[in-house]
Length: 470
Image 1 (cartoon, rainbow, N blue to C red):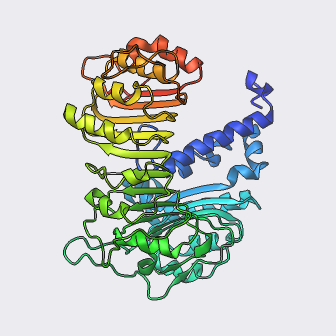
Image 2 (tube, helix red, strand yellow):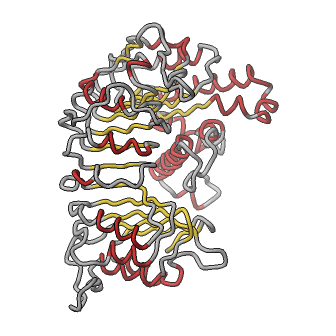
Image 3 (cartoon, rainbow, N blue to C red):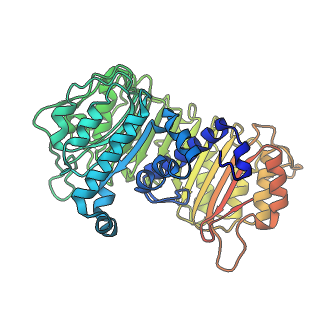
């Protein structure tokens, strides 16, 4: 390939892997819910710019590679909302009708080149869009393995009772299903008749807007093991656990609701297979929610819920992964968090998100006391403010957890003891460096590199400079 350069000696199989890696990166960036530090391009670039149409136009050999490997065309990402909101794009391409026609033609060509490959389709479409894209998707229902779609109301009939024999993952955004936060706190169904999506014998993972009593969606309930719900209130969690008997992973995004819902239970509900629970934008209602959850959880993530310990402690015997927000602003407050976290002796993964500044004493007490969190193998700490932890303290904590150095004997005159527990395998730190100071870890970079060479997966990211260490 590319006969005028040394790249012509690269086997076609290698080029194929390069193309696949490139497309995976483009799709991951396009599907990211927000533009964060790891997103390399705006949402809409995955189809019009960073795609196979561009790659196949580079040269004859690249075009041949693209056209002869249908697997490259198996993932399709489209977002019409972004195009309609971009005035420069609309002006350059002749307005909405012409742009829509070109994109749909491109979509049709793309799917034809996928041939019989199982399909991944992410399709975010403006509700007023012409029905032709609907026909393209429903016509490929037999091949679709993953479907991420915003369903306009005028498409419901086309999708009702449609067979998806290969579908394993489904994400449906249903317009109109929202909680009315201002006043009545009521919700309404978006459809007059149910939307039957139960003809999916392999479906196991679902993400939907609202609860099923409001979005009117019917699924093969007994098959679902992973679910994500948005625009919900805490009471909905109980309904979901009762409706899905084999659920293993559940994420609920409450959108800041302070409404519990009617008849919230006081006892723990039955959910024999539930292992992982994530609560987003939950606030103080997490206290009531956690008191209804079965006590065999292995993973718990609580976002925006702070200043509560008691409802989480009953899970200390089974939790292997814990992700919580911290807000210790005083030494006494930090000490309370240490006492709380020390009781989770089975933890393998710990993620701490804090909007307060943390200090050396917290890192030392959390990670350098022998016998504390003995099974910990992965730690993520995300600070929203400047780090006040010295590099030498950070290095000492990492070396202790890697069984290189001894730790601290707090309140004892005995010599420092070694860790003698699970070896730390992964450590990630995100924070802001102070203005005019070096990024965190800069002064100990050689020592950190040695830990990396010895097997530690290490990432230290400075939000102010955008730099990584090591």
